[in-house]
Image 1: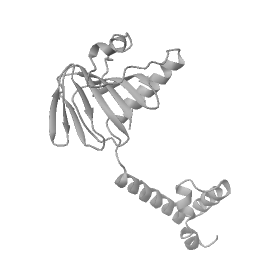
Image 2 (image 1 turned 180 degrees about the vertical axis):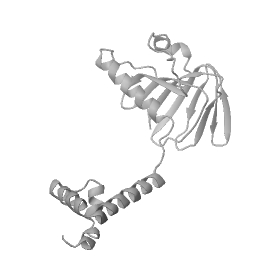
Image 3 (image 1 turned 120 degrees about the horizontal axis):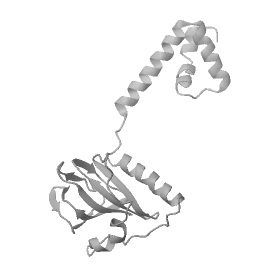
Image 4 (image 1 turned 90 degrees about the vertical axis):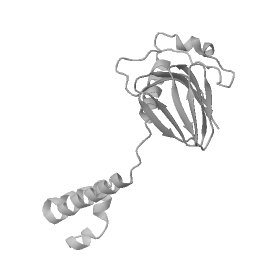
Length: 203
């Protein structure tokens, strides 16, 4: 297209910014931009508009996303190095801390020195059940689960959990199960590290 106005209105520049042009179209756009400051200005404006739209409509990931992602990478690496898959007991009302001593006392299940608000070590995984040891400190996390039931067993420290309008303080030995489709907030004092066995069970 030799008419710059037609070219600008063709949608080609938007496709270029989004990375949707093929190699021939990409070369064509870049040649046009080299020949016309007007085309270059429009490309920059389109880029800024898309970036602004994405920022305005982005949804921040939950605070738990990064710790669990790092824990998954760590667990995968451990398995690749020869660790055998484990199947910790399913958490329930009668669960006791001693049921998980095998994992709680492992040399590699320790809190690192650079601990932030949350640290996670996965101790067992199947498609239906994910079990982890979790350390929390100075954190308030709001969540809702639609596809998995979240169960806690407090090992050390204490934490407060609010489910709907009901508030509970959990201490070592306490078990708690969060109902599906229910907003809940877990809060831990910045002065206390709360260590828990956390299990997410597919609903």
